[in-house]
Amino acid sequence: MLRKVFCRNQGVNSISEKPKEFGEFLISEVINPSGLYKFEELFKRISGGEFSLKWYF
Image (cartoon, rainbow, N blue to C red; front, side):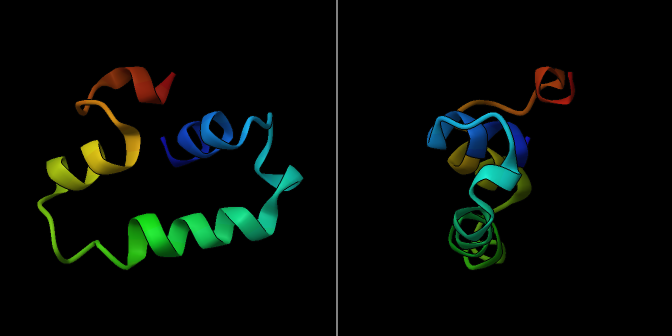
C-alpha cells in the first residue's frame, strides 16, 4: 500500500525514481503519526481510503 500511494502521489512508477522523497514520506506519513491513531485510522490517513484487499493486488 505504501508503494502504491507514494507512486500515485508522486506520479512515478517506482520508489527508486525518488528514493529521498520516499524516505521523507515514510517518516512524515507513517512513522511520526504511528502512535497517534488506530491502525484503521492511520491506514485511511495514508491511503485516502478504507482498508481493503485492493491494496495487495
